[in-house]
Amino acid sequence: MSLISVGLMLLCLSVIVTGVSGNPANEIVAKPSLAPTIDGVIGSAEWTTASNVTFNQTTVYVMQNGLDLFVAFNISDNTENSQDTCTIFFDVEHDGSSELQADDLELVIERDGNLTELKTTYFGPPHNKYFWTIATVSGWTAEVNSSSTLWQVEYNITYSKINVTAGSTKILGVEFQSYDVASSTSYTWPHTDDPLFSFKPNIWGNMTPNDFNWIPEFSNPLIQIMAFIVTLPILFYVKAHKKIHK
Image 1 (cartoon, rainbow, N blue to C red):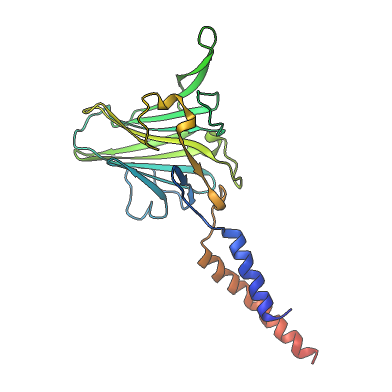
Image 2 (cartoon, rainbow, N blue to C red):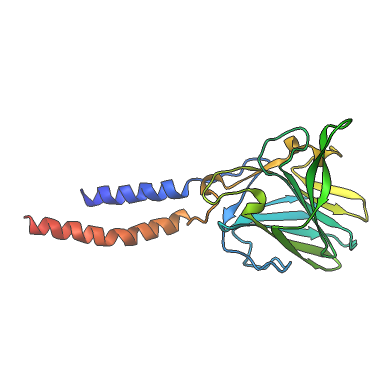
């Protein structure tokens, strides 16, 4: 095998491992990263590699480390109220139904730090539908940092909570919401004017690991550097082997 062939083979391997990421409308990619400190403060270096979306005066960051999903909200708001909320809605099995199903999940945190979890419960006749009901908070934590002009939230959500398996390519349905009590206004991503959006997973967006899968990956440059380092002994061996057989 020539030196060029070896190099090309390893370069192709690096492309296969890392893939090519994209972020179309209404989709956010949970990129691999180190775990942030969940203290409610979005540190300057903690979320730099995360994907993000901005709506109104809210920016949401998303990333994962192969064990947990991390989501952060940065909300500019100078009408401080302890009952302001931010919420993540999950369509865990991504069924995209026009009505709530058994797998849907709602994780809420108030500006005063109070956590609330809602699951869906089926009600028979005359409704024959699933509705949101209060559940025990489990499988996730969140912390808040609030001031007179903004508030920040950091979520740590375990993979088991959202039925994600490390290494899979599973897609989650997702909707982000921030609610301002002073103006009685709800802001959402993906944007919707439907007041019943929380009952309609089919209008929510997507959260995907894209080509990364739900495990940490290295960037293409780093993979290529590592591949080159690993290649060196092989190249020396091939060169020495040729000399011996001349």
